[in-house]
Image 1 (cartoon, rainbow, N blue to C red):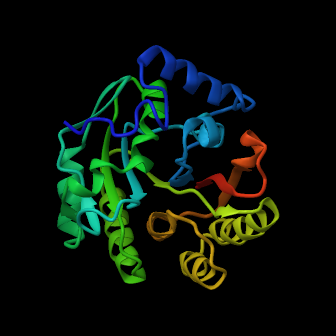
Image 2: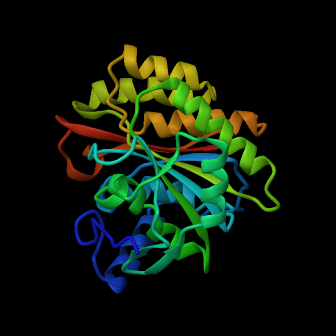
Image 3: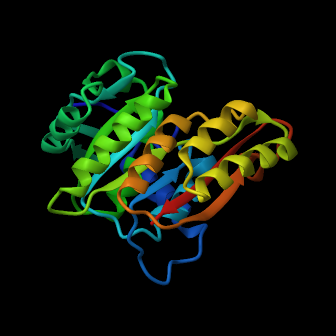
Length: 269
């Protein structure tokens, strides 16, 4: 069992309070007129009080499959640089979510640099905070947790192509989520400008452009490695468009616009 690392910090620590918090995140967005299928998505991962309403903009409109690959960055620096969780399940206050062992093995067979490793996941929040949304919407689902921490484009290509190979030959739908916030701890004007550069690359479904603009424009987008990997996989699976669902900053919640973090939810179809 992978026990929760940030319950009571990034999100409420008891089931009733967490259920209410997730509902508030969904209520902050207009209800979707219809659920939409998708290949991949980018979702933020700050505390739910800050970015939960942005994440909910995706989760509220998505026709979610019951098998998911969730890619996240490695904020702690611990463990292997391309780590698949070895746990059988992940726990949140809302219950336990099984890890898809069959899918994990298929991905590691297709991308040998993916390794089973729990150290990378032990204290990592960016994947964990996605689970309460999924638990609220899906009666049952399985997922593969992948933590990526090496800034190497060729690694993104290897893993992205492996994901596309496995997803493309699967007998049922598998969704690909990339957990990422955008620019960090600059003023609102600077963050909105830098965020837009990253968003434009994502909307163009151009992983090389995203990688380049993050480096050249000094955008502190913590999940650009997962997002790049997701784009590579989605393009290989035949994606034809990307759509921005919501963009906001922490200043919109805190009122402090001097040091903000940017958040966006985007869907790739």
